[in-house]
Image: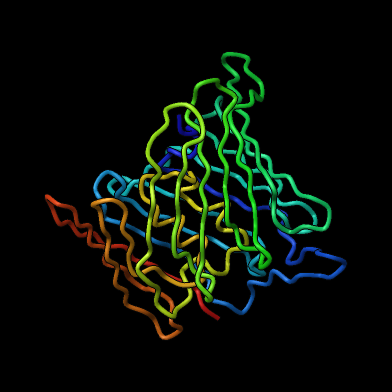
Length: 284
């Protein structure tokens, strides 16, 4: 059973107390987003997910607010706050469904590491006096280049579907292949996603540290793998295929080489459908 906090379509992400550095092996690793183009909005006209996100940064680029809203009435349904530790590493995120219900995701690190090795999710319902009930967790594994190569999902509920996601990259740090293996619950055939290629341009979220853990569609088995592919990659995907489904993507860019728009064409045995996305930035 997939985690509810990752199924939300509308959320607000607030990054607070983000210091532009972290420490690894005794060295300072700069997470500097100043003097770079920062995304301020993106939007999509895809069916029930039609809406837009707005991004706001403080003058130093060390604070971030992201709000996702319904396109027709700009209604905000829920929001997320992401708290950073003093050294710039994500500490926890809190996803509010309403004033009484929220999910808290806690990140954990090994000494000297700038990448979390796991996170755990807890649910609180003030009306039912349920306080921080553990619901699920993710394990994270990396290669020698600190690229995320495996994600494991486990739940506290006996019999729930659990899985392992393995990821491979090309020499440019872009995702080539993802494979899901179901390890518990209803055992399903492995699902394989092959990425057809990438452009040579940075993706819209390249200046947001740890975006792969904070991306709006944060479920690691989201029905649409594009946010995962983009979040894990340096550049913009040109398409992917899984089973009998294929998506082809094309872009228009600004004078900084960042995507301004993306046309997505979904193809299956029975239909062809296209939808558009747009991106806006604030550049120095």
